[in-house]
Figure 1: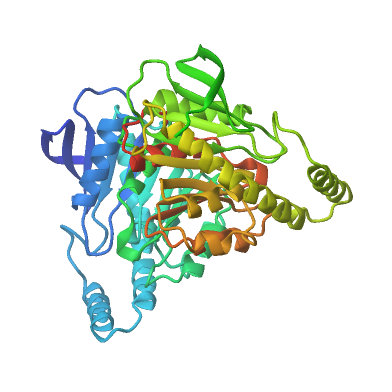
Figure 2 (figure 1 turned 180 degrees about the vertical axis):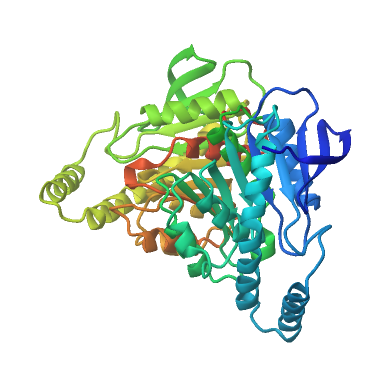
Amino acid sequence: MHTPQFTAESSSNGMVERDFTVGDVPGVLWSPASGADRAPLVLMGHGGGAHKKHPAMTGRAHLLVTGCGFHVAVIDAPGHGDRPRTAYDEQEIAALREAQAVGEPEGPIVVRYNARLAELAVPEWQAVLDALQALPEIGADGPVGYFGIAMGTAIGLPLVAAEPRITAAVLGLMWPDALIEKARQITVPIEFAVQWDDERIPREAGLALFDAFASTEKTLHANAGKHIDLPRFEADSAVRFLARHLGRAVTVPA
Amino acid sequence: MHTPQFTAESSSNGMVERDFTVGDVPGVLWSPASGADRAPLVLMGHGGGAHKKHPAMTGRAHLLVTGCGFHVAVIDAPGHGDRPRTAYDEQEIAALREAQAVGEPEGPIVVRYNARLAELAVPEWQAVLDALQALPEIGADGPVGYFGIAMGTAIGLPLVAAEPRITAAVLGLMWPDALIEKARQITVPIEFAVQWDDERIPREAGLALFDAFASTEKTLHANAGKHIDLPRFEADSAVRFLARHLGRAVTVPA
């Protein structure tokens, strides 16, 4: 099994940050600065239009690495971050901008574009997981979790359905259309976020996706507010959920 | 303003426990063993058929007192614990047992009985709060929270609607029928629990009650499982919610 190719390393704020590639896919691995003990791995998916080192990713990674001692990995989704956009990416992004400009629903475009990205990204994630598990500080038999909201769910939910190594996941804020059948195949513990007053994803659609998971342990967190208003404290909750299921103590704010 | 009449005091497990009465109402006040600094007060409501020192109450009190430094008070609801049952109590309890025995819905009986108990209990709680705020270690201007599930919500929700001194509340697991109008008057932060597979309270009924709160900050926690399966970790979550809104740091398990 091949390990990732590391291309840069730095350290700050209690975390070692290592850029890597697995094949053509660029990623980042954050690890505790304090040492090389074997520890659980959390895969995180970034949102649409963002990238592997978006502040939402570095902030959550910091909670997971310094609060729980986890390793955290993020890769750029196809067409995002350091990866080239194809003509198809440009076409779908233009369609999305056009819909937003004229006030038409963006759901149908996001659903089909993200479903296509998930088809590409799931095997990429599986190859990255193979490579990361070849590192001695992660290992092939340690616990693996997933944490991704919005496009991070559009890609992550099919990944969790396909990947028995992932044993707990935090997901949310996505239309059910392309995902509901895969949610029915998922049995691991799930924490799932919806926004109660989401102006893009109808309330019933969000609840239907939560309902579809076959997991005996699943928790819905629905907060008042619009799509963009997902509260900061849900990141702390996600960290506690992952700590509980991946088997680590946690130190995070209340 | 009259203070409560203290009738017994003991200390264990980091908590001072003081039994008290305010008029005819017996209660218990738990406080940090470590000292008499002024601290926020959490009122807790027990469930139907339980009492002020039920293990669910002492367990939650321990988290709030030793984890956050709060004072915690519980009173026996009318017809519960150390209080006499009236002929009306006996009649409603018999009706409930009969419905359970023959498999008829208990909702209509619980709703009407708990609504009557709430009419009696809300002014009792307000007198108890007056008395507790006359204690120097609580004070008249400190933060006050409420935490009660099931019958603790049937009584607590009207209390929160009536009582501007309560600035945050954890509620859940109750039919909306007698409560929805009062929920529409509530604007303080709310954390609200429903069980996704509740065999007694229909899912739509639980969601409708959450929807009715006028609070700009409200969070629904819906967990897979039946009415009785509310997970233990929701108590930890409630403690963190109250710590956040009443202004205290917290130390609780992940």
